[in-house]
Length: 323
Image 1 (cartoon, rainbow, N blue to C red):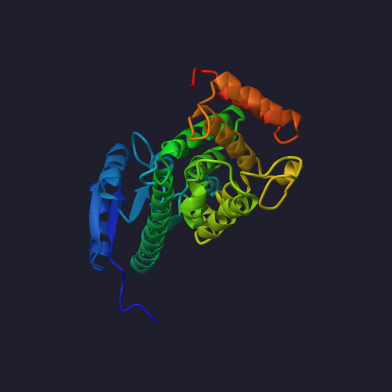
Image 2 (image 1 turned 90 degrees about the horizontal axis):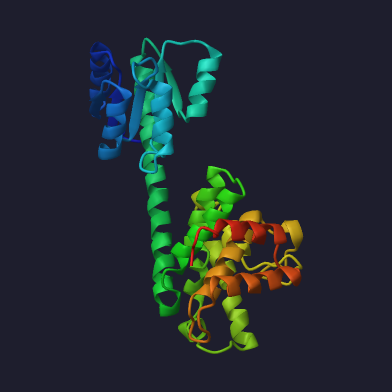
């Protein structure tokens, strides 16, 4: 079904020249957009974080921090990283466009601005922002569900937060990039999301599980994978959710992966998961000291379950006094 008319939204126009802002504001107002203005990059960053615009239109050549730097700052901040940014420039140099792409720009407009092109591009980017808002909302629901699952078991309170911290700390020691670190943090909160499908009689059983109960418990990795699979934004998290119980010798679950077939982020999360489980009290055991927990994990290295290189790095990651 065709849209009945232009989709209006909130647009932040950033240009140090007032006449340029007035011109673009006039064009956008014809489509019913709410227009915010900033005369420089610093003010733009403040407004963007407070007002949550649907699109930011940035002039490239500005005093102070220019459009490239402002764009990069917007894309690096958690609150504005998904906001579409249009770079407005009279520059024709291919290198400048590459610089804009590296800064995270979503689109480009050349000066002088053509009204119909401005209208079409802003409308398209507002639609994109609405889609990403929907994805963020869905991801927030899944994350809330994961934390709700954690509250079912008093013995695991805070487990997700601690695991996320341990895993990202190990990731930094290994020199992983920001995308991997973000996936590790989110994976820490979502790794056990599939336990929503495990009955309390199994999940909360204080003693050892029977073989049938353990088989039921193991399904949480598959259930979690299916839940995360509905969101493209969790594409990098899915391997963590599905494979954090795999072992290097192939004796883990759910797929019996071995060696390098186990995704690195899942291996990292698995080590952090075991460490936190060992160092917190459970109904069936007291809390291990950090030294006792690490000794147990090195036993798993000797059994061929864990990577010695990763465990050595984990020791370095927690050597600043954690627990």
